[in-house]
Length: 380
Ligand SMILES: NC(=O)CC[C@H](N)C(=O)O
Image (cartoon, rainbow, N blue to C red; front, side):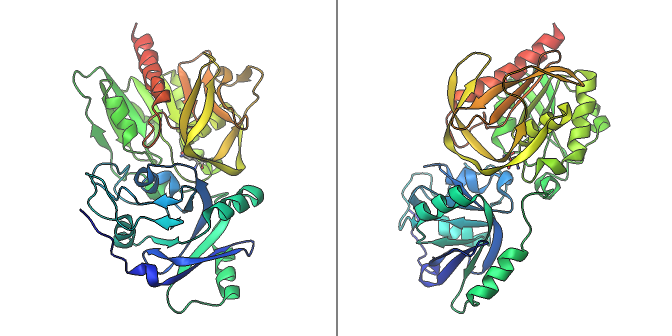
């Protein structure tokens, strides 16, 4: 059993939003100061996967679930090698975690990785504020001698904004690596890593795919050097409007007509490659309980999300694009945001949410099978 360190929780902490709203609490994890974009996640479980999802780079995540840390931290569920959130906001941290896989407490893990958090915050009030005013910059300051409020606010307002941030190269692998197929190898996929979660190549490997994960800087030649049956573009942090390089690589793939699948950032890149715009949502979708309709089957699935931007494509008509006809294949039933795109004349599609789950329901796992079918179709 792991027990809590109960050290930092005696240290005062302050959360300062860029519009001047202030919440007071206690230090959680590392003591110090941090900045980022304040966003909220509605997941009741899966905090370890959330913290280690590279798409959260430069974001301060507010958990709407009131108790966080109950199952501790294990050695199995991380989605990457480190925690990426720039700060963490919780209401009531677990005093003693309890789970057979738990190895450490969450506050120990945050402290060990230098991640500054705050506990004791009315996260419901904070979430309502972000929902009304929109995602915005935030700072967390902890310690026994804190700067005055004006100084803290000035620092928050100097922090970089998420709009216009080009972050994939900061989180993606520098070296290519291979995730081997499980069982008989059926296909080779080149996966462009823009901030990939570990579960994504795993979901492909389970289906007999050998996945060559390539750095974000990979060129069209690098992609075709692995002789792929399909090409994948991953999730990732930052503003898709800055992703000019992956957009141009994707256009090269679309020109050749290789089966293509994109998730999240990959969906936004497909949108851009087709000539659609992207825009920042007021407060985004983050959590594991978002209803999405697959318009190609009419089925509704409950899905995992983590996106602050979206594709601006028409919902009710087929669009003519430089790569043939395209349509919106999936839509969020909460707010009609575009959640998927598919081409009608080429084997290419993408979704804005997370069929790999991790954490979240597995309703959308069929999308990996759809990718396999596209690759089978190309061989037939
Ligand atoms: N998970 C993702 O790939 C997120 C994509 C993009 N950074 C967004 O916030 O919308």
